[in-house]
Length: 501
Image (tube, rainbow, N blue to C red):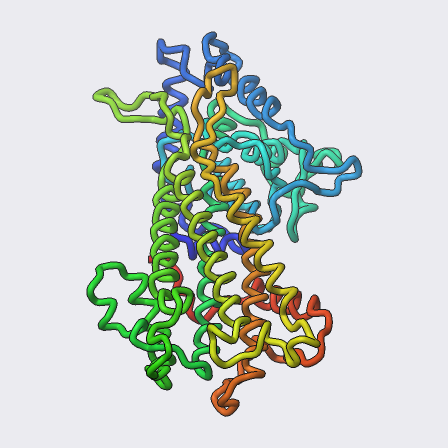
């Protein structure tokens, strides 16, 4: 499974490969049933025992244990009294989480009943998606509270979103269902298999990687537009200059920008600086390093998507298989990766804020008026956008303390060190939203700068700005920024390459 698959499944579709793993998963389930019937070991975690600090006593009522897991975790109110969802993941995010969990369990080793996996895939196909809460995961022992709402919905005690939301059982329709197999009763190990994994953290991080890759790519499109009529020194973008280093990101940036920049490079003149300031000259290094981080984080996400995250898991022995307990639910790598993505986004915010200062300051750009105002001293121009840019940048930088070092002991000290990746991805969600706003500010600023271009004939037409007008006298720009935000959010840059890497 790659990020392209994840993105596609977050919108529509289902898995077609499950029939290929049916026999192997049914074999594992039979092995699990054999262990339950004949093994002398009656203290297998989460099958005979309770959970976390309660894992010390054997209990043969395996169905009751599974329901106990679901009920003790479903503590976040996600519906109003009349059944309206609130405080939950978006529909597309929940689809991605469900898809990630299905794929994870299809890899084998969990022991889940194949019929349950098929049922989950049916929900994906019918777009009948369990409502999942935003909060409640520490990314240790799996994404417990958010994922527990998947089996709660299967029991008919929660609810769904999507086109097929009314097909499933809920607490508001008396548990009636049009989907065969629902309501569902968990067998031994099934509820813990659905809940005890990293699919919430991993799926959300995967979507964020894709969103930020899109934001970065649109930034490059805006630079192409700007540099088609505004001259900068081209040496900083010369491909040969970047062959002295081994990083691929800067090479990709100059591959895109050098053909534009080189058409009318700024000329050196006696008495003037012969190099641009860093926010211009170091664009390949700044944006290239961010691109390298995005690609690296994307690969980590794909590694976790294609790994089994569960506990306990089946491992081979000389006589067959047995259950082994460990920490396969611990989302350490994706927690680190979540912080890395946030740091990369924070650097992008800082660069955009400085780049806007370049556009707004005539002493730096040498071409445009102060604050891109039609009449400096009378009209404020884009001063307000500059203030908003600085606010957004400061906010994101404030939020960039790594979550992966914020461990707090919990669960009766059973979970005495946790990676906090889910805390980080929720923070990243806020940053992505702000990213689209700052991208829109950058876009309108670049568009406004075309009003002052010395060579108007070099200003290209760009569909992004269709129906928008540059600003003469000061006016409210809320409509323009909102329009640009919607256009960016609902489209994909032509420079995006998927799958990442």
